[in-house]
Image 1 (cartoon, helix red, strand yellow):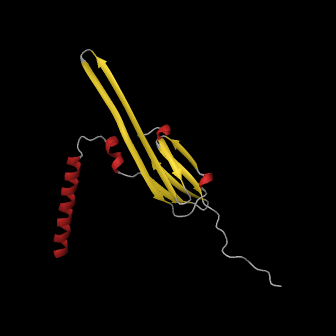
Image 2 (cartoon, one colour):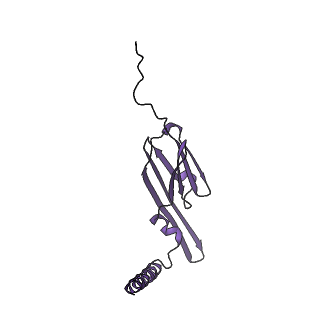
Image 3 (spheres, helix red, strand yellow):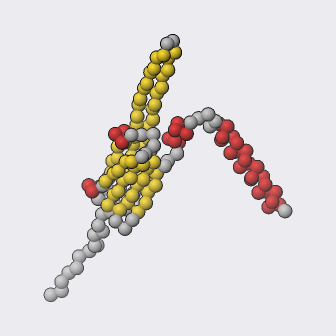
Length: 142
C-alpha cells in the first residue's frame, strides 16, 4: 500500500531526527539545557489561578515574581564562582544561569493577595481571582 510506504518514510525520518538531536546534545549535562525548555504549568480552580514553575537550579533568594491583574513574570538568576588549588593544579567552576518567563493570565486576579511558595525546586504562585462585578444597576420603579 502507498500509505504504508509513506508512514515508513516518516518513521525513518523520525529516527534520523532523534539520532541527530541526541548526538548534538551528547555530553551536555541536563542542568545546562534546562533553560531551553519551559517547565511551567498555569491552572485554574474556582477561587485561584495557580502557576507552578520547576526551577531546580535556583535558590529561593534568586527568584523574583512580579504580578499585575492580568500578568505574571517569573525571573531568576545566579552567578557563582569557585576556585580550588591543590599543589600545581587549579580547578575553577562557574555556575551561571538566568530564567525569565512572562505570562498573560486567563482571568483578572487580585494581585495584592497573591502568595508564592518555593520548596525543593518547585515554585507555586497562587493568585486569587477578582470577584466578578455585576454589570449594570437595578433601578427601582416609582
